[in-house]
Length: 378
Ligand SMILES: Cc1cc2nc3c(=O)[nH]c(=O)nc-3n(C[C@H](O)[C@H](O)[C@H](O)COP(=O)(O)OP(=O)(O)OC[C@H]3O[C@@H](n4cnc5c(N)ncnc54)[C@H](O)[C@@H]3O)c2cc1C
Image (cartoon, helix red, strand yellow):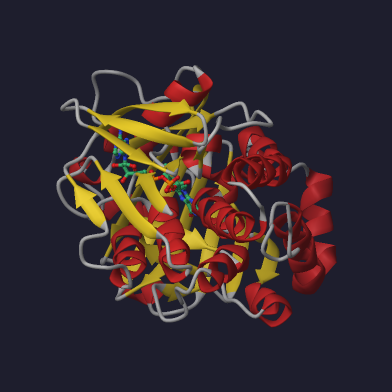
């Protein structure tokens, strides 16, 4: 088939790999003029790595492997540990934090040289009969047997297909980046989430001597004053390494990402058009599953296309399966439960449980939102 994918992000490129391997003629239309190099890093859990492998792309050697994830209070006292080597043992795939540019580079590397068309902004999508067509910002109309909107959180394709406006925002904001100034944290496979009344600070080794850091805060920075000064003041009672991190960051390092949430309907498209990834179901990064779910969508859509008798049956089947899985993780992420200080009983439970049981609970959460780990079919 002739297939058009809108957006060369994590989900669009991943899908292109699977569809090219199945012999389809695939073109990816990307509005940016070149591959993205910003966007800090994303943590790819075992389900995302399994989905990528199922699409023919190994992520095994990228970024920084995370073997242990420790949860601390603001004073630096640990209240839970997850042993992520168990996730690797149980699923066959590790957990790693990977710079976004590195991930996109890997996803693009196996595609035909002309598969991604940069500098092509899609304005809208038209559907009729069995196929679909895109119209670009400069008025060019291109037809295909299938159009997939993988154009992210403010998707033009979603607007055309579902008629719905941009997502809502739940009030939380992330500031995120990569730093080369913490070699002692970068060298290990130990990640930290430090949570208190001011919000959460996360620190993850991301490979290549880099540490991915982020702050999740309930509410925007006050207008008219430097964000870094405000973050330092807000998190001043947090123990090291939070204070040490804030000492080295500058105003140029901090960029705000508001936490967006889409309603997730049963149907994501009509005729020969559908959505994938954030375009279908943007949700906050607090469960670190957005990119993982985009990879899961790509895995499921490829599987649906290779088993259904018509494109339309494949798309509607894919949407039904994925909507059911993604709703669960979306509402958990939107609750921001991991960004709030746990109640004393939850802290005690975390300590008593031990890493093995705590990791088992994490695996249950991941399994519930995973098509690839459950072998879903339409
Ligand atoms: C602060 C923060 C931290 C995060 N951390 C994690 C994490 O640790 N783990 C995780 O799994 N997820 C994480 N996420 C979520 C993750 O980044 C997204 O869920 C993921 O990138 C979605 O992939 P996608 O392919 O759907 O969209 P994107 O990766 O956003 O790609 C969309 C692409 O479409 C292009 N595009 C947009 N509009 C058009 C148009 N009209 N025409 C053509 N092209 C267009 C864009 O330029 C872009 O290249 C985080 C998100 C944020 C904001």
